[in-house]
Image 1 (cartoon, rainbow, N blue to C red):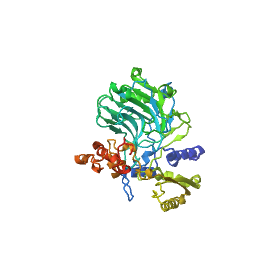
Image 2: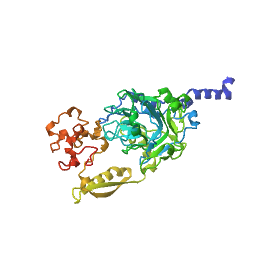
Image 3: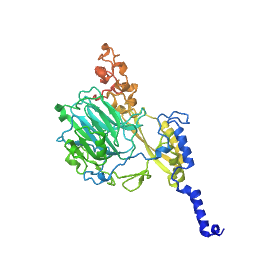
Image 4: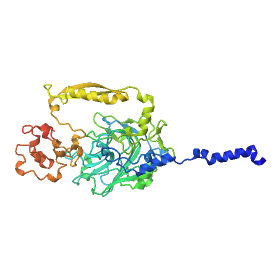
Length: 501
């Protein structure tokens, strides 16, 4: 009995109880019961099936499992110590595209292009990161190949993804392949495209995410090589890229996935060097590149840190150039935007600094005709919209301040403006949903492929703009629909090469 009443035995019993019961729960690294229930509920939820009145369309994966940052290791010790790593440069999207100097021979057959990029959000569709163009053949703007960002949704710029498009000089139409998921803004990613004369492939962070064999043969012949121009950061149509770029490589061979992964990790194979055409580190971009007219070279990325290593294991984040943890917030399963994320809203409500009064300045540009008649919107409509905005946002301490800019221009007032339908998309041999409208001739006939043969011959070029003939394959009614003496060209001229479009 003395043995059990001794102080050290009592301490031993307490210690055993502590490790065996409540104290043990502190040391557990598994999920709590509440988390397990929520994960089980999330797995039981069908993506896209939400308890809401309206259908939401495609949705993200169940919420909790998306909290893990889906990033691969973005740099390795071999890459960090590589003398050829260079530095990252930032493209503003305003006149800082780069054009390869004529002295560099561009591969006309097999090729591989690789680079690290960190795109910003809100890119236009399409955005060109890099591309090969034909400066001599103006009748077709899609000869060559493009690497960029393009929206694959019918609703404007939603669901933007990386894409790789290619059209050889002998092909009748362009072929495009897309990544399997939308890109994440402000996150470093490694992208690569290859073409071996049969297969065109798109790689994202070392994984093959797209493939097609619709194209074949060389991209261009040796007779047209002087017409080819390689650009980075945009194109001549101002489909420019906003974001950072680091370490661009171009080979005259279609590299395999293993080679791409090794290069992504900073390893170089000496046997591949004879096939290397460009290795751009942006230390001295003026040696190989030219700027566009009245343009400038892209500037080094602010912070100068470029890509840094991935915090593996349980860190769940990426350290940026300032040493801070970079995390990604995604919309929940039944949400539309990141503002539908419960954690975001909760923090907004709990932090008083987020609830301070804010003022949003916005401007309405109202277009009138030359006689200052027929405004696009009336003063009453502007006032009503302004009042509705303030009524909706005042509970959140947000007010709106309106300014109105009036423009008197009859030509502009009579023009048709379609949101998200870029002028270069009309009649580009591809049906763009945002341009599929009667006032664009259903994308200049691209969205009416099954009805292209319904224009009678006697109506072609008869001095009247016939809508059924106002397509590219009928040369826009043999020019009648772009003739100001025949029709109102502001409503009927879809010819991209016409000055009346």
